[in-house]
Length: 186
Image 1 (cartoon, rainbow, N blue to C red):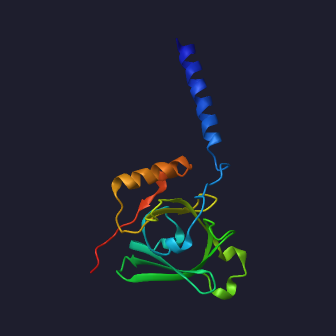
Image 2 (image 1 turned 180 degrees about the vertical axis):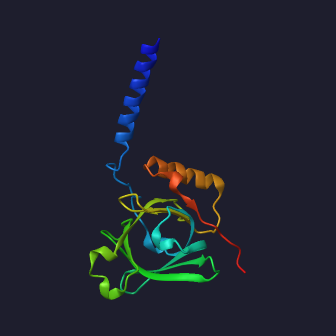
Image 3 (image 1 turned 90 degrees about the vertical axis):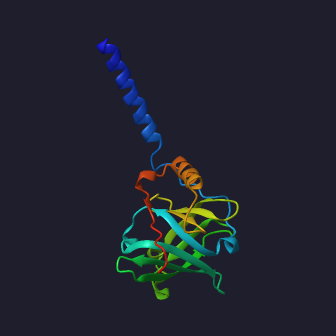
């Protein structure tokens, strides 16, 4: 009987090892097929994110406002509330990579005079977006960053769970997500 359990245990470990191997970072992140940038413009509230160093001071009410610039780029205005109750803002620039309906963008918050340096641009890939442009998920090709965004400060629980399922299917670790607090305005 012990040999049978040992054989079953070894088989399970082997199967799990191959499953984990097949779900590694070798599987590319899949973006949405196309992005209608004019529909994407406007305000997006952060619902959840992977924690990151550049948002450490943000404790609540994180949002981004996207608007078109005359040169074809986008103005990105990120804001949040800090622990001291102040509003922190960062203005950046986004540009599409590839075709005019490409869901792959790059964003920079460094000064314009540094824009020629590739390292100041970060990947901003739209990987999930509902047909009404009300809920979006943004990441990068390495799965290091992840944001769930909504046109409203709160997201319906069922909608959120459906988003989690889709991003989990893209091999994102949803356990790493940190919910964003939406404190009432004073």
